[in-house]
Length: 391
Ligand SMILES: *Cc1c(COP(=O)(O)O)cnc(C)c1O
Image (cartoon, rainbow, N blue to C red; front, side, top):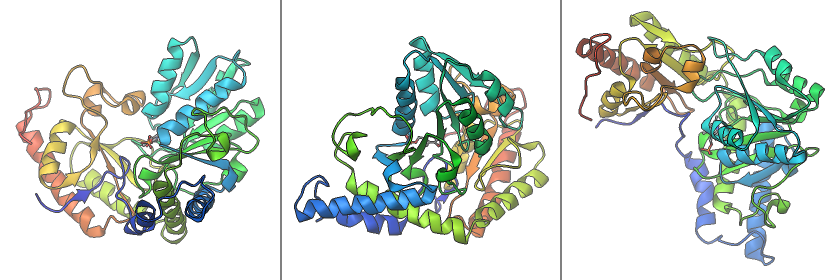
């Protein structure tokens, strides 16, 4: 096994060494409960205050609008259920066909509880038609919940236009900004969304820590009741991970200011080289507007899962939409929503780059990928059954 070549930053990110350093004291001597009034507890509370400011700064919010919780999924569930609690008679939810499973699974559950769900379509480029959003809103609509940035394609939804519509129609808006935070500038002070989901492990902090932005004028019902987070999210705070989230947010704020073009340049070289040197390669999703770090490509005639296994032997990590080979598992819902055929979706790979991705790593990937694609194509006649490779 050669050195790791990690091109799957949309799945999760490595913990930045500075983030790890910042969190370690809070796993060692500084073990206080932030609700305790002696010094040990007060120091933990002060650490939470600082982290709250750091996360708020990253997204242009006020610290009091940041509620720490366990993950992006919890933030999304809390936001949608909170909006539904405002007026129990309103039983219509608007979302899209390309959401993260956190939103999809909740909405599917709500549908079984009698809620009407509108699944807004996207076009072949992965773009949302906001006139369809406007047309879908009725007097029954309780909440609109949409992605800011798509985790599979990187496509950015037009959040300013979306927020302008929901404001005009007076419908609460939740945005899943888990992939957008730290990758594109976010200013929630001016946007006008009521709820925004954030997660630390997509921005170089540990897994299992997230936050919900709750606009100070928005109505809210907690998911977990307890005294912490000003009764908005019960449960003793995960101090070490919150400190890590804060540090990661500080680093992301700085990286957005100092090196915004770096990752996009790597991504473009990667994509252009593959598109121009391998036959039968297509990009999924519009060139713009999208995240600077994500490239979703179809390599016609290959089985993406087989590619992942061969890549793994060379240390290259990337991702396929979802498992396709076993008949029961569906190909990526995001790609199929864009009109990509089942076969093409099963031949698609997502590469997502990070702050530490180097030109040398791109060179290595550009050597491995064409070789593996050629090998798969020669072993697997188009239309034939996929060849199994031992991992
Ligand atoms: C990862 C992700 C989530 C879920 O965040 P967790 O902290 O893993 O629960 C939600 N939405 C998007 C777009 C994501 O990429």
